[in-house]
Amino acid sequence: MADYDLVVRGGTVVTASDVVRADVGISGGRIVAIAESLTGATSINADGLLVLPGGVDTHCHIEQLQEGGGADEESWVTGSTSCLAGGTTSVITFSTQFKGHGILAPLAEYRRRAAHAMVDYSFHQIITDASDAVIWDEIPRIVAEGVRSLKVFLTYDPLQLDDRAYLRVLAAARRAGAFVTVHCENYEAIRWRTEALLKDGRTAPKYHAWSRPRMIEREATHRAIALAEMVDQPIQVFHVSCSEVADEIARAQARGLKVWGETCPQYFVLTADDMDRPGFEGAKFMCSPAPRAAGDAAGLWRDIKRGTLDIVSSDHSGWCYGGTRGKQVNGIDANFRDIPNGVPGLAARLPILFSEGVVGGQIDLNQFVRLTSTNPAKLFGLYPRKGSIAPGFDADLVLWDPARKVTLTNAMMQHVIDYTPYEGLEVTGWPVATIRRGEVVMRDGRVQAEPGSGRFLPRGPYDMIKPTGMLPDGFDAALFA
Ligand code: URP
Ligand code: ZN
Ligand code: ZN
Image (tube, rainbow, N blue to C red; front, side, top):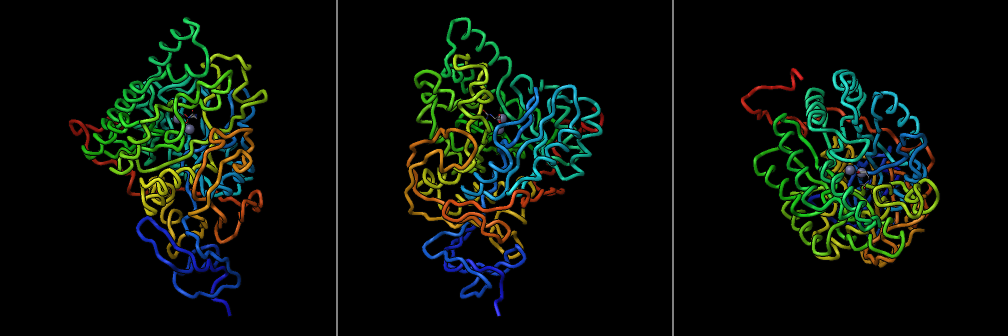
Protein backbone atom coordinates (compact mmCIF):
# COMPACT_ATOMS: atom_id res chain seq x y z
CA MET A 1 0.00 0.00 0.00
CA ALA A 2 1.21 3.51 -0.83
CA ASP A 3 2.30 5.63 2.08
CA TYR A 4 1.52 9.00 0.49
CA ASP A 5 -1.01 10.55 -1.93
CA LEU A 6 1.79 11.89 -4.11
CA VAL A 7 5.54 11.49 -4.14
CA VAL A 8 7.87 13.92 -5.90
CA ARG A 9 10.61 11.51 -6.81
CA GLY A 10 14.34 11.95 -7.26
CA GLY A 11 14.67 15.74 -7.26
CA THR A 12 17.05 18.06 -5.43
CA VAL A 13 15.10 19.73 -2.65
CA VAL A 14 16.11 23.33 -1.98
CA THR A 15 15.07 25.31 1.09
CA ALA A 16 16.32 28.54 2.65
CA SER A 17 19.16 26.59 4.27
CA ASP A 18 19.62 23.21 2.57
CA VAL A 19 20.10 21.49 -0.76
CA VAL A 20 19.41 17.73 -0.49
CA ARG A 21 18.65 14.94 -2.90
CA ALA A 22 15.38 13.42 -1.60
CA ASP A 23 11.81 12.40 -2.36
CA VAL A 24 8.96 14.50 -1.00
CA GLY A 25 5.93 12.63 0.37
CA ILE A 26 2.62 14.53 0.28
CA SER A 27 -0.72 13.59 1.86
CA GLY A 28 -3.83 15.68 2.40
CA GLY A 29 -2.24 18.60 0.56
CA ARG A 30 0.63 18.87 3.07
CA ILE A 31 4.24 17.79 3.09
CA VAL A 32 4.58 14.73 5.30
CA ALA A 33 8.05 13.34 4.64
CA ILE A 34 11.35 14.18 3.00
CA ALA A 35 13.38 11.01 2.64
CA GLU A 36 14.70 8.45 0.18
CA SER A 37 12.63 5.86 -1.67
CA LEU A 38 9.11 6.96 -0.67
CA THR A 39 6.07 5.29 -2.22
CA GLY A 40 2.95 7.14 -3.28
CA ALA A 41 -0.43 6.45 -4.86
CA THR A 42 0.89 8.70 -7.62
CA SER A 43 4.30 10.11 -8.30
CA ILE A 44 5.95 12.76 -10.38
CA ASN A 45 9.49 12.38 -11.60
CA ALA A 46 11.84 15.19 -10.64
CA ASP A 47 15.09 13.59 -11.83
CA GLY A 48 17.56 16.30 -12.79
CA LEU A 49 15.22 19.00 -11.45
CA LEU A 50 15.28 21.28 -8.43
CA VAL A 51 12.32 21.05 -6.08
CA LEU A 52 11.66 24.56 -4.73
CA PRO A 53 8.97 25.88 -2.38
CA GLY A 54 6.18 27.54 -4.39
CA GLY A 55 6.81 31.21 -5.03
CA VAL A 56 5.19 33.68 -2.62
CA ASP A 57 4.58 37.02 -4.34
CA THR A 58 3.68 39.53 -1.64
CA HIS A 59 3.27 42.51 -3.94
CA CYS A 60 1.13 42.19 -7.06
CA HIS A 61 -1.95 43.95 -8.38
CA ILE A 62 -4.75 41.65 -9.54
CA GLU A 63 -8.28 42.74 -10.43
CA GLN A 64 -7.74 46.02 -8.59
CA LEU A 65 -10.83 48.23 -8.58
CA GLN A 66 -10.65 51.60 -10.29
CA GLU A 67 -12.20 54.78 -8.98
CA GLY A 68 -14.41 55.37 -12.02
CA GLY A 69 -15.73 51.77 -11.89
CA GLY A 70 -14.39 48.49 -13.26
CA ALA A 71 -11.10 46.82 -12.42
CA ASP A 72 -7.60 46.09 -13.73
CA GLU A 73 -7.52 44.02 -16.88
CA GLU A 74 -5.81 41.12 -15.06
CA SER A 75 -8.54 38.98 -13.49
CA TRP A 76 -8.15 36.41 -10.75
CA VAL A 77 -8.38 33.58 -13.26
CA THR A 78 -5.85 35.01 -15.72
CA GLY A 79 -3.59 36.29 -12.94
CA SER A 80 -3.63 32.91 -11.19
CA THR A 81 -2.85 31.17 -14.48
CA SER A 82 0.18 33.40 -14.94
CA CYS A 83 1.31 32.79 -11.35
CA LEU A 84 1.10 29.03 -11.70
CA ALA A 85 2.84 29.12 -15.09
CA GLY A 86 5.73 30.94 -13.41
CA GLY A 87 5.92 28.84 -10.24
CA THR A 88 4.09 31.15 -7.83
CA THR A 89 1.45 29.54 -5.61
CA SER A 90 0.58 32.29 -3.10
CA VAL A 91 0.04 36.01 -3.53
CA ILE A 92 -0.78 39.07 -1.51
CA THR A 93 -2.65 41.59 -3.64
CA PHE A 94 -4.45 44.81 -2.75
CA SER A 95 -7.81 46.08 -1.63
CA THR A 96 -8.12 49.80 -2.41
CA GLN A 97 -9.90 52.47 -0.44
CA PHE A 98 -11.25 55.47 -2.36
CA LYS A 99 -11.11 58.83 -0.61
CA GLY A 100 -14.36 59.63 1.19
CA HIS A 101 -15.21 55.95 1.59
CA GLY A 102 -14.42 53.25 4.12
CA ILE A 103 -12.45 50.02 3.74
CA LEU A 104 -14.98 47.38 4.75
CA ALA A 105 -17.12 47.41 1.60
CA PRO A 106 -14.16 47.35 -0.84
CA LEU A 107 -12.50 44.52 1.07
CA ALA A 108 -15.74 42.51 0.90
CA GLU A 109 -15.84 43.13 -2.86
CA TYR A 110 -12.19 42.06 -3.27
CA ARG A 111 -12.89 38.89 -1.33
CA ARG A 112 -15.93 38.19 -3.51
CA ARG A 113 -13.84 38.58 -6.68
CA ALA A 114 -10.96 36.53 -5.30
CA ALA A 115 -13.33 33.59 -4.89
CA HIS A 116 -12.24 32.79 -8.50
CA ALA A 117 -8.55 32.53 -7.57
CA MET A 118 -6.49 29.44 -8.36
CA VAL A 119 -3.61 30.48 -6.11
CA ASP A 120 -3.82 31.02 -2.35
CA TYR A 121 -4.16 34.68 -1.49
CA SER A 122 -4.38 37.49 1.00
CA PHE A 123 -4.65 41.29 0.76
CA HIS A 124 -2.87 44.44 1.78
CA GLN A 125 -5.47 47.10 2.52
CA ILE A 126 -4.53 50.40 0.84
CA ILE A 127 -5.41 53.38 3.03
CA THR A 128 -6.02 56.61 1.09
CA ASP A 129 -8.25 58.40 3.58
CA ALA A 130 -7.27 58.21 7.24
CA SER A 131 -10.72 59.15 8.55
CA ASP A 132 -11.58 58.59 12.20
CA ALA A 133 -13.87 55.68 11.26
CA VAL A 134 -11.13 53.93 9.29
CA ILE A 135 -8.43 54.59 11.86
CA TRP A 136 -10.28 53.73 15.04
CA ASP A 137 -12.89 51.24 13.92
CA GLU A 138 -12.31 49.69 10.50
CA ILE A 139 -8.57 48.89 10.60
CA PRO A 140 -9.00 46.78 13.78
CA ARG A 141 -11.94 45.02 12.11
CA ILE A 142 -10.08 44.00 8.96
CA VAL A 143 -7.10 42.86 11.04
CA ALA A 144 -9.46 40.65 13.05
CA GLU A 145 -10.59 39.23 9.69
CA GLY A 146 -6.97 38.26 8.94
CA VAL A 147 -5.96 41.14 6.67
CA ARG A 148 -2.91 42.11 8.67
CA SER A 149 -1.04 44.51 6.36
CA LEU A 150 -1.72 48.00 5.04
CA LYS A 151 -0.21 49.91 2.14
CA VAL A 152 0.21 53.65 2.04
CA PHE A 153 1.33 55.83 -0.85
CA LEU A 154 3.40 58.92 -0.10
CA THR A 155 2.76 60.02 -3.69
CA TYR A 156 0.21 59.54 -6.53
CA ASP A 157 -3.05 61.39 -6.94
CA PRO A 158 -5.54 60.32 -5.64
CA LEU A 159 -3.85 57.83 -3.31
CA GLN A 160 -1.29 60.01 -1.54
CA LEU A 161 -1.24 60.49 2.23
CA ASP A 162 0.41 63.54 3.80
CA ASP A 163 2.72 63.04 6.77
CA ARG A 164 -0.02 63.51 9.36
CA ALA A 165 -2.30 60.96 7.71
CA TYR A 166 0.64 58.57 7.35
CA LEU A 167 1.34 58.94 11.09
CA ARG A 168 -2.29 58.17 11.88
CA VAL A 169 -2.08 54.97 9.81
CA LEU A 170 1.18 53.94 11.50
CA ALA A 171 -0.39 54.47 14.91
CA ALA A 172 -3.55 52.56 13.95
CA ALA A 173 -1.40 49.68 12.70
CA ARG A 174 0.56 49.69 15.97
CA ARG A 175 -2.62 49.47 18.00
CA ALA A 176 -4.12 46.72 15.82
CA GLY A 177 -0.94 44.63 15.44
CA ALA A 178 -0.78 45.18 11.67
CA PHE A 179 2.20 45.68 9.35
CA VAL A 180 2.61 48.69 7.04
CA THR A 181 4.09 48.73 3.54
CA VAL A 182 5.04 52.06 2.00
CA HIS A 183 5.39 53.50 -1.50
CA CYS A 184 8.16 56.03 -0.98
CA GLU A 185 8.37 58.97 -3.40
CA ASN A 186 8.04 62.69 -2.66
CA TYR A 187 4.63 63.86 -3.89
CA GLU A 188 5.28 67.61 -4.09
CA ALA A 189 8.67 67.23 -5.73
CA ILE A 190 7.17 65.01 -8.45
CA ARG A 191 4.31 67.46 -9.00
CA TRP A 192 6.70 70.37 -9.26
CA ARG A 193 9.06 68.68 -11.70
CA THR A 194 6.18 67.28 -13.75
CA GLU A 195 4.66 70.74 -14.18
CA ALA A 196 8.02 72.09 -15.31
CA LEU A 197 8.61 69.24 -17.77
CA LEU A 198 5.16 69.59 -19.30
CA LYS A 199 5.53 73.39 -19.58
CA ASP A 200 8.75 72.78 -21.47
CA GLY A 201 6.96 70.42 -23.85
CA ARG A 202 8.71 67.32 -22.52
CA THR A 203 5.76 64.96 -22.60
CA ALA A 204 7.11 61.63 -23.95
CA PRO A 205 7.13 58.47 -21.78
CA LYS A 206 10.87 58.84 -21.06
CA TYR A 207 10.16 61.99 -19.03
CA HIS A 208 8.39 59.84 -16.48
CA ALA A 209 11.86 59.00 -15.14
CA TRP A 210 12.90 62.66 -15.26
CA SER A 211 9.85 63.59 -13.16
CA ARG A 212 10.91 61.36 -10.26
CA PRO A 213 14.71 61.11 -9.94
CA ARG A 214 16.28 58.88 -7.34
CA MET A 215 16.71 61.52 -4.62
CA ILE A 216 12.94 61.94 -4.33
CA GLU A 217 12.67 58.21 -3.60
CA ARG A 218 15.55 58.48 -1.14
CA GLU A 219 13.99 61.48 0.63
CA ALA A 220 10.60 59.81 0.99
CA THR A 221 12.21 56.60 2.22
CA HIS A 222 14.14 58.54 4.84
CA ARG A 223 10.95 60.29 5.96
CA ALA A 224 8.84 57.13 5.94
CA ILE A 225 11.41 55.45 8.18
CA ALA A 226 11.83 58.42 10.54
CA LEU A 227 8.08 58.69 11.11
CA ALA A 228 7.73 54.93 11.57
CA GLU A 229 10.62 55.09 14.07
CA MET A 230 8.81 57.82 16.01
CA VAL A 231 5.65 55.66 16.23
CA ASP A 232 7.63 52.42 16.69
CA GLN A 233 5.73 50.76 13.85
CA PRO A 234 7.53 48.14 11.69
CA ILE A 235 7.37 48.86 7.94
CA GLN A 236 8.49 47.44 4.62
CA VAL A 237 9.66 49.84 1.91
CA PHE A 238 8.19 48.62 -1.35
CA HIS A 239 9.93 48.47 -4.74
CA VAL A 240 13.37 49.88 -3.94
CA SER A 241 14.92 50.94 -7.25
CA CYS A 242 18.53 51.68 -6.33
CA SER A 243 21.23 51.49 -3.70
CA GLU A 244 21.01 54.99 -2.39
CA VAL A 245 17.46 54.23 -1.28
CA ALA A 246 18.57 50.92 0.20
CA ASP A 247 21.23 52.84 2.16
CA GLU A 248 18.44 54.54 4.12
CA ILE A 249 17.06 51.13 5.01
CA ALA A 250 20.50 49.80 5.95
CA ARG A 251 21.04 52.75 8.32
CA ALA A 252 17.67 52.09 9.96
CA GLN A 253 18.39 48.39 10.32
CA ALA A 254 21.77 49.20 11.87
CA ARG A 255 19.92 51.28 14.48
CA GLY A 256 17.85 48.24 15.36
CA LEU A 257 14.65 49.39 13.66
CA LYS A 258 12.19 46.94 12.14
CA VAL A 259 12.44 48.18 8.56
CA TRP A 260 12.60 45.84 5.59
CA GLY A 261 13.16 46.49 1.90
CA GLU A 262 11.71 44.86 -1.20
CA THR A 263 12.90 45.14 -4.78
CA CYS A 264 11.53 43.76 -8.07
CA PRO A 265 12.90 42.10 -11.25
CA GLN A 266 12.29 45.24 -13.32
CA TYR A 267 15.03 47.07 -11.41
CA PHE A 268 17.58 44.44 -12.47
CA VAL A 269 16.80 44.20 -16.18
CA LEU A 270 15.03 47.42 -17.25
CA THR A 271 16.49 50.92 -17.32
CA ALA A 272 15.21 54.45 -17.89
CA ASP A 273 16.45 54.11 -21.49
CA ASP A 274 13.72 51.54 -22.15
CA MET A 275 11.20 54.36 -21.81
CA ASP A 276 13.00 56.17 -24.63
CA ARG A 277 11.74 53.85 -27.38
CA PRO A 278 10.18 55.35 -30.51
CA GLY A 279 6.65 56.72 -30.33
CA PHE A 280 4.57 55.57 -27.39
CA GLU A 281 6.41 52.25 -26.95
CA GLY A 282 8.28 53.54 -23.88
CA ALA A 283 4.98 53.44 -21.94
CA LYS A 284 5.39 49.67 -21.72
CA PHE A 285 8.27 50.16 -19.28
CA MET A 286 6.79 52.92 -17.12
CA CYS A 287 6.54 52.06 -13.46
CA SER A 288 7.17 53.87 -10.20
CA PRO A 289 9.75 54.26 -8.88
CA ALA A 290 11.20 54.49 -12.38
CA PRO A 291 13.82 52.01 -13.60
CA ARG A 292 17.23 53.63 -13.16
CA ALA A 293 20.56 53.29 -15.03
CA ALA A 294 22.33 50.14 -16.21
CA GLY A 295 24.86 50.25 -13.35
CA ASP A 296 22.20 50.28 -10.64
CA ALA A 297 21.54 46.55 -10.77
CA ALA A 298 25.01 45.86 -9.36
CA GLY A 299 24.18 48.01 -6.35
CA LEU A 300 20.93 46.15 -5.76
CA TRP A 301 22.79 42.83 -5.77
CA ARG A 302 25.12 44.22 -3.12
CA ASP A 303 22.08 45.26 -1.08
CA ILE A 304 20.67 41.76 -1.37
CA LYS A 305 23.95 40.20 -0.33
CA ARG A 306 24.26 42.46 2.71
CA GLY A 307 20.66 41.59 3.65
CA THR A 308 19.24 45.09 3.30
CA LEU A 309 16.79 43.96 0.63
CA ASP A 310 15.41 40.53 1.39
CA ILE A 311 12.31 40.08 -0.77
CA VAL A 312 11.89 40.21 -4.55
CA SER A 313 8.25 40.67 -5.58
CA SER A 314 6.78 41.22 -9.02
CA ASP A 315 4.72 44.42 -8.43
CA HIS A 316 2.70 42.97 -11.32
CA SER A 317 0.38 45.56 -12.76
CA GLY A 318 -2.67 44.60 -14.79
CA TRP A 319 -2.59 47.12 -17.65
CA CYS A 320 -2.44 46.27 -21.35
CA TYR A 321 -0.44 48.37 -23.80
CA GLY A 322 -3.22 48.53 -26.40
CA GLY A 323 -6.97 48.96 -26.05
CA THR A 324 -8.82 51.69 -24.25
CA ARG A 325 -8.30 50.85 -20.59
CA GLY A 326 -4.56 50.39 -20.12
CA LYS A 327 -1.50 52.40 -21.06
CA GLN A 328 -3.46 54.10 -23.86
CA VAL A 329 -6.50 55.02 -21.77
CA ASN A 330 -5.76 58.69 -22.51
CA GLY A 331 -4.72 58.08 -26.12
CA ILE A 332 -1.49 57.23 -27.87
CA ASP A 333 -0.27 60.82 -27.53
CA ALA A 334 -0.92 61.09 -23.80
CA ASN A 335 1.74 62.92 -21.84
CA PHE A 336 3.68 60.82 -19.33
CA ARG A 337 1.61 62.10 -16.38
CA ASP A 338 -1.55 60.59 -17.86
CA ILE A 339 -0.20 57.09 -18.59
CA PRO A 340 -1.01 54.38 -16.00
CA ASN A 341 2.07 53.17 -14.16
CA GLY A 342 3.22 49.61 -13.65
CA VAL A 343 4.56 46.63 -15.56
CA PRO A 344 3.31 43.02 -15.69
CA GLY A 345 5.55 40.31 -14.24
CA LEU A 346 3.80 37.50 -12.32
CA ALA A 347 5.27 34.69 -14.42
CA ALA A 348 8.59 36.36 -15.17
CA ARG A 349 9.62 36.96 -11.54
CA LEU A 350 11.21 33.61 -10.71
CA PRO A 351 12.89 32.99 -14.10
CA ILE A 352 14.44 36.47 -14.20
CA LEU A 353 15.70 36.29 -10.63
CA PHE A 354 17.05 32.77 -11.08
CA SER A 355 18.80 33.65 -14.31
CA GLU A 356 20.23 37.00 -13.28
CA GLY A 357 20.90 35.91 -9.71
CA VAL A 358 21.78 32.22 -9.49
CA VAL A 359 23.05 31.60 -13.01
CA GLY A 360 24.64 35.07 -13.00
CA GLY A 361 26.65 34.11 -9.89
CA GLN A 362 25.15 36.76 -7.59
CA ILE A 363 23.23 34.51 -5.18
CA ASP A 364 23.08 30.80 -4.33
CA LEU A 365 20.07 28.50 -4.49
CA ASN A 366 19.20 29.00 -0.81
CA GLN A 367 19.26 32.76 -1.22
CA PHE A 368 16.99 32.45 -4.26
CA VAL A 369 14.46 30.50 -2.17
CA ARG A 370 14.73 33.01 0.67
CA LEU A 371 14.10 36.01 -1.61
CA THR A 372 11.15 34.55 -3.50
CA SER A 373 9.38 32.34 -0.97
CA THR A 374 10.67 32.01 2.61
CA ASN A 375 11.26 35.66 3.46
CA PRO A 376 7.95 36.92 2.02
CA ALA A 377 6.10 34.15 3.84
CA LYS A 378 7.81 35.05 7.12
CA LEU A 379 7.46 38.82 6.86
CA PHE A 380 3.77 38.66 6.01
CA GLY A 381 2.69 36.05 8.54
CA LEU A 382 2.25 33.07 6.20
CA TYR A 383 5.03 31.02 7.80
CA PRO A 384 5.15 28.10 8.76
CA ARG A 385 2.31 27.25 6.37
CA LYS A 386 3.96 28.68 3.23
CA GLY A 387 7.56 29.34 2.26
CA SER A 388 9.46 26.11 2.86
CA ILE A 389 9.63 22.38 2.20
CA ALA A 390 9.28 20.62 5.53
CA PRO A 391 6.73 18.36 7.22
CA GLY A 392 3.56 20.29 8.03
CA PHE A 393 3.93 22.94 5.32
CA ASP A 394 1.39 23.16 2.52
CA ALA A 395 2.66 21.08 -0.39
CA ASP A 396 3.33 24.05 -2.68
CA LEU A 397 6.27 23.09 -4.89
CA VAL A 398 7.91 24.07 -8.15
CA LEU A 399 9.89 21.57 -10.18
CA TRP A 400 12.56 23.69 -11.75
CA ASP A 401 14.86 22.93 -14.65
CA PRO A 402 18.01 24.90 -13.80
CA ALA A 403 19.58 24.41 -17.23
CA ARG A 404 16.66 25.18 -19.51
CA LYS A 405 17.34 28.18 -21.75
CA VAL A 406 14.28 30.21 -22.70
CA THR A 407 13.75 33.40 -24.67
CA LEU A 408 10.85 35.15 -22.98
CA THR A 409 7.75 35.92 -25.04
CA ASN A 410 4.44 37.34 -23.97
CA ALA A 411 2.65 34.07 -24.75
CA MET A 412 4.76 32.31 -22.10
CA MET A 413 3.55 34.74 -19.43
CA GLN A 414 -0.01 33.43 -19.77
CA HIS A 415 -1.44 36.67 -18.37
CA VAL A 416 -4.21 38.68 -20.02
CA ILE A 417 -1.84 41.56 -20.66
CA ASP A 418 -0.91 42.06 -24.31
CA TYR A 419 2.81 42.53 -23.76
CA THR A 420 5.70 41.74 -21.48
CA PRO A 421 8.44 44.31 -20.89
CA TYR A 422 10.81 41.33 -20.93
CA GLU A 423 10.07 40.23 -24.52
CA GLY A 424 13.22 38.68 -26.00
CA LEU A 425 15.09 38.45 -22.70
CA GLU A 426 17.10 35.23 -22.54
CA VAL A 427 16.91 33.36 -19.26
CA THR A 428 18.37 30.13 -17.96
CA GLY A 429 16.16 28.20 -15.55
CA TRP A 430 12.46 27.50 -15.96
CA PRO A 431 9.52 26.00 -14.03
CA VAL A 432 8.39 22.72 -15.59
CA ALA A 433 5.69 21.83 -13.03
CA THR A 434 3.85 23.58 -10.22
CA ILE A 435 2.16 21.76 -7.34
CA ARG A 436 -0.33 23.63 -5.17
CA ARG A 437 -1.38 21.93 -1.92
CA GLY A 438 -0.47 18.56 -3.39
CA GLU A 439 -2.22 19.04 -6.72
CA VAL A 440 -0.22 19.24 -9.96
CA VAL A 441 -1.65 22.46 -11.39
CA MET A 442 0.94 23.21 -14.11
CA ARG A 443 2.96 20.83 -16.23
CA ASP A 444 5.12 21.85 -19.18
CA GLY A 445 3.37 25.20 -19.37
CA ARG A 446 -0.17 23.79 -19.31
CA VAL A 447 -2.08 25.20 -16.34
CA GLN A 448 -4.91 23.04 -15.09
CA ALA A 449 -6.61 24.33 -11.98
CA GLU A 450 -10.22 24.96 -11.07
CA PRO A 451 -11.22 28.61 -10.75
CA GLY A 452 -12.12 29.00 -7.09
CA SER A 453 -9.61 26.40 -5.88
CA GLY A 454 -7.39 29.10 -4.33
CA ARG A 455 -7.84 29.73 -0.61
CA PHE A 456 -7.94 32.90 1.43
CA LEU A 457 -4.98 33.06 3.83
CA PRO A 458 -6.03 34.75 7.09
CA ARG A 459 -3.00 36.08 8.94
CA GLY A 460 -2.96 36.10 12.74
CA PRO A 461 -0.48 37.89 15.05
CA TYR A 462 3.23 37.01 14.75
CA ASP A 463 6.42 38.13 16.45
CA MET A 464 8.32 39.57 13.50
CA ILE A 465 6.10 42.64 13.22
CA LYS A 466 5.83 43.39 16.93
CA PRO A 467 7.07 46.88 17.83
CA THR A 468 10.59 47.19 19.24
CA GLY A 469 9.51 49.04 22.40
CA MET A 470 11.79 52.00 21.55
CA LEU A 471 9.81 55.27 21.73
CA PRO A 472 11.15 58.83 21.87
CA ASP A 473 10.85 60.05 25.49
CA GLY A 474 9.01 56.80 26.26
CA PHE A 475 5.76 58.58 25.36
CA ASP A 476 3.31 56.43 23.37
CA ALA A 477 1.45 58.99 21.25
CA ALA A 478 -0.27 56.16 19.35
CA LEU A 479 -2.48 55.56 22.38
CA PHE A 480 -4.01 59.02 21.99
CA ALA A 481 -3.98 60.06 18.30
O1 URP B 1 4.26 51.66 -11.05
C1 URP B 1 3.81 50.91 -10.21
N1 URP B 1 4.58 50.35 -9.32
N2 URP B 1 2.51 50.68 -10.20
C2 URP B 1 1.81 49.87 -9.31
C3 URP B 1 1.36 50.60 -8.11
C4 URP B 1 2.44 50.69 -7.08
O2 URP B 1 2.97 51.77 -6.87
O3 URP B 1 2.79 49.70 -6.46
ZN1 ZN C 1 3.88 51.33 -4.92
ZN1 ZN D 1 2.55 47.89 -6.56
